[in-house]
Image (cartoon, rainbow, N blue to C red; front, side, top):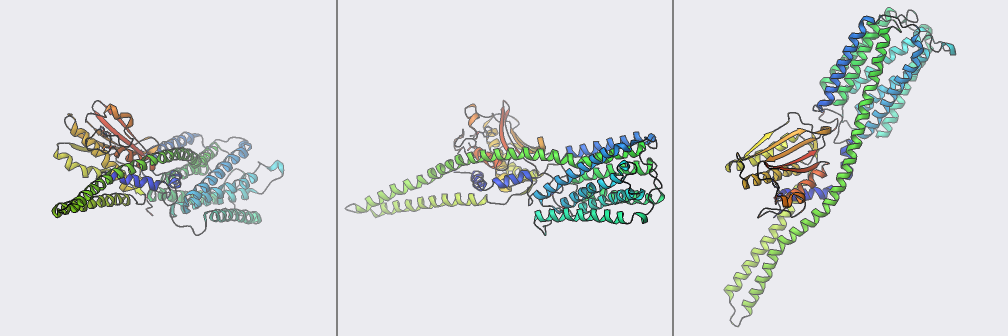
Length: 551
Ligand code: ADP
């Protein structure tokens, strides 16, 4: 008889027929399943962010002694710098908009609007910068550049604050395409408004600059206000959601803080000093951080997408085999009572048609028919109930908890046979998206097999170890190791085929279904065998940028 795990797995495979898009969504981060929020376990990203912040601090310390030195006529480099910043911020905005289009998170649209806002103010800033485009006759006045700079300085952290405070998964009031058009239009209108107001009020603008290079006392209000906004943004980003993107955005704001400290304080508020240029370099770094992260993530996503499509194809192929195998097993299970019913019916008829009918014998034959009928019916009911059990929604899962439940279920029974079932869990596993019932059955199946194997072997102490850990690309890995006799060589290369078994009462379907389930989840299942036992491992992709909204 099929184990529930196997039937659930088949149910999963059937459900899998309509799941190509779900799998692709999984890889890309579908809106319902992948809110851009909290994933505290992507350790490598965090380490990279911390290292980068350290580098920033070291660079900052090295620059300090030279901050006030002048750099001569270096304003000639400004157009190149401005073009760099403009392109970096614009590309970041475009990628964030593309990401918003996939995940439908209002927070992402706010962040992309911030980048767009900042980028669109750059041309006006550099065009009006004293002495840079003067040969072309562009002279907009000392205060114009400073006013634009002030708007850009204060505007960007306001958008970041809005991003940090915005819900990650709130439903959109407009369709995504319309939301994008509306956001781009609003940002452009806002930038145009600022430029027109500043342009028209040139004569009456506050004296932020004393001359082309030195800021006036009034300017100091701008960095002071900006630093407060930066500080607030960093605190909120790090305490509220802590997704990987939040951490990177916090790093951006941190670089901008260093930029501001160098430009406005250590550089003495003197334009084109060493400190001023060093600050600008941090500005460039800040503008590149989110862009780089998004590019790296896109490459990961495409890699995972390719894997998922391949897994889906394999699952479809496996699905045919699974369906054939299942029909064969059902036919086998039901044929037995049917054959027995026909035999008993014939016997009953014969007893009744005798010259002296033997009613007692005929009654016995009829009783057997009723029993066989009940058996066939319970087989059908059992198969149906197994199928329906697997039809459950996919949700975000903590694999440690799921594995722990399977271990608990197996532990006490195994202990009676002096088999220790031990678990070694990685402390912070990324969450995965999956069907808890199906994956629970996979776990129970693998543990049952391992216990069966240990029982049949002579290894001592008899034990099964279940480990979880984080593999390549942050995938979640689970392994079930035992110290049984290892995988029998005659089945080693057909382990995952249907009806392959070395056990007396085995069906040989368990592993096939386990693999089908794992692959339908975009993962892999494989086995290794050594002298000292066997190990079955599976990996599942972790949720990107995901977790639970704590806001
Ligand atoms: P069944 O348990 O009904 O035999 P499975 O598909 O679960 O079906 O397993 C197929 C075969 O794989 C088993 O009969 C056994 O030979 C081998 N196998 C599975 N797990 C282990 C293990 N932990 N150690 C050694 N062999 C194993």
